[in-house]
Length: 335
Image 1: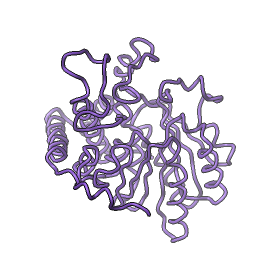
Image 2: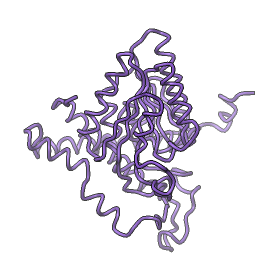
Image 3: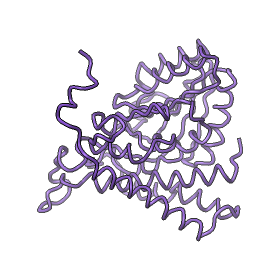
Image 4: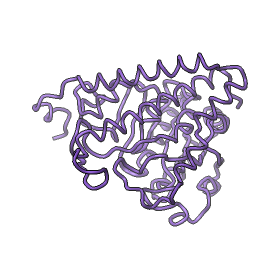
């Protein structure tokens, strides 16, 4: 499915927004975690600063999110992973309430109780989880609900290549294939399950090959390219929306940062990240838009300025919003 210039410009702007958000968070997250009198890596206070807890960022993996979400409607469901920001932004989750949630503020998506791995937005039908592989069963549930209601809505489950070795992966694919559920399974292959390289943990070169075991299409995008993802996802989602059952899409993507912020990344070969960055998907899409006349330097600068302003405003909103009252800890709990 060929992308229009309008779709490509949307994807480019969203990729810029995701990257700006992630790089800003990478800086903000370190506040209060690294005492100024020591060097980075010698001590790390994970509970310090305005954003406590773990932080998993997706810089470099933007094509997976925008290439898929460009085909989705507001009624479609997206279930993300523990590294969820790019999916949330591409699905339309507001930056301000998302950032506020990560800061633990009352104005956050979950009133500050979930944090960055547990974003939940009913209006935009987005959720995620810190549990590996936990995106697949809920996506099947959303797809089943759509089918029973007679709607042509689809559900998308994003997951990493490490999650494809979980039982939930096989159970979800089997159930979705058996019931012909309108769900697209998207494997985001960034080569590493935390610090373990895929070749050391997975018996097949590509997880897309596993789709044949369940009688459903399996498509592999070997390049971290937004246009290639858009084309593959478009065909898969159109098929699913027609009621022809689920599909599995695998994208070879690149993680520029650590598994989590503070990760020493000693498992990576020297110079790997620098080599990956030479093939930056944002620069590649921008170059394509220039070649086709859809973008020039002035429009690019204007877009980047607008993106920077939106992200800065979101972080300022998160910083200045009030914390929940202590008694709010007793709300929204099950007895």
